[in-house]
Length: 166
Picture (cartoon, rainbow, N blue to C red):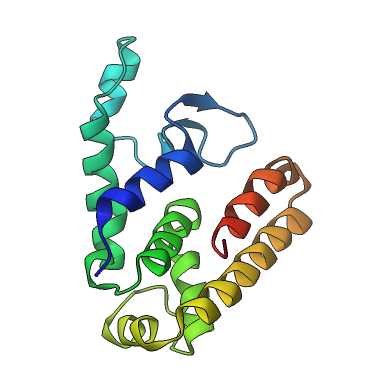
């Protein structure tokens, strides 16, 4: 079964442990990928607002509760599949699960239930990762085509999408 710690370490490479505030980012101000816009009650904002850095354990715990547990990461057999779904779930929310469900052929409802989990655990790992990579890059392209202000994120998004199949 997949292990959270390496998934978290990989996520931090994708997100970076830094504070950012890009005016066109829909997440607005973020720290280590945690969006103040979408997670205004995260306790780490108190540290940031006082000029301090939140402890890494606080970031780690946040991602475990808010993302890893919601994709039942500990129940996914393949580490690579778990890391891909986890990272994309952080980046695009339920759409990441819908894309995974489309790839494995279950109902794309955005909720990772037992049928989707079974399909993830029985599909060939390489096949899933390649198809999921393409699905994510296609989604990123569609976002930029719909909203030109988001195209600034294409290079990072494409890199993130490609990392799925590497």
